[in-house]
Image (tube, rainbow, N blue to C red):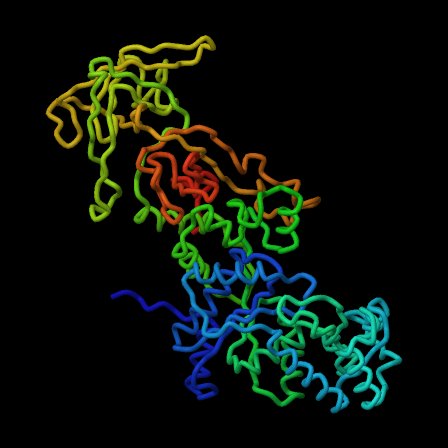
Length: 551
């Protein structure tokens, strides 16, 4: 009998809340800001929020934190929705912080009427100076003592567009000597004369994240508002607003964000990589974005399994990229169709096989017989990998060499008789003889061979561009190194083979299929493919070439 999986600390909190009737059901939310594409770090939060709701029969809202019109675009909204659906999750409600702009404005008026908020004319630099330091208390602004009536008038004028950007802000009136600097009269509204992707030009004042977030949770009656550890100092302010407004008491809980080796997770740094041309867009397969991982050939299950394996913790740690790749191989090993490809071709001619003959051989599509079989053409002229022939064989060399025998996978045993070189001294053609009675599945030759190599019939093979992707950075933690993080980009993160050979059946491949190119790795069709030119991306190698996975 298998041991029951232990609960993570958030599950323990939820079960205690349900048992004590603190709540009768749970409601979570995933609240991305639509200012960029989601990355693998977001997948951890997605899996956690949606997974908890599924486990405990609750609901999850998708709420876009669209309170900054300058950086937000509808393109990002659509990409976020597509990524979440691709990962296998569906939200209960699609909502936007902008849905609540009227509510938030009313909450701000209520704080002013209670003497808990005031309009400040100070510049951002002056406000920063007056806030003090972690070891020195702040000082009150000269505008802190404005009357309720004056603050109501000024805030209404802010809303009506009387003032320019930065001329005034609305601040909560809390405590300028508080040990938590976020409680030192935080800004809750600022002026921004900018077009909003949903509300157009209705508003020229916008709430700050700390003001919009907790109140949006409360309006939606979110029971467990789950965020990452950097929001621990914000929790006190989150609770202060809810208490002073006397609204539904949503509760905030924090967990460790995902940090992973050989990549960066900062949206700012990812944007630099895109804008400065180090990668070809947000969905470049070297990017840690979900769209990049999808294009590279990752599967939703592999990412969900990865998130489950790393778990939910209260302490930051660094996860090895090899674990993500392990989860991918684990999935693809049982789901990817096996096919043959030749990336660095050399010609092999079987001299005693009829040059006019082509026969169809049968090959299994995968390790599971339910995956079926396929037909592959065989003729006297083949392509094999250049690395499968050695003119002067090394010790324990079991592939082709002068006088040696190997099995052609799913076909016959051949013996190397001779070879030719071109004008540059490179081997151009290998000549072999075959044993007709050695056909795979019906071998009566009695010949024993130690090596098996893959091949393609030259006349029928299709051609493709192959993109071999590797890790984008050559150091484990590029953000922690001295100097510009971009100086640590791996120069070999992309190698392009302009003309490789593949099985003719791959001409019918579609974008969601995954293939194991036998002995070469896992690959998928790229969106750049056309009917005239196929392009395949290497998803991951067959084995970890960067070191063993930490146990």
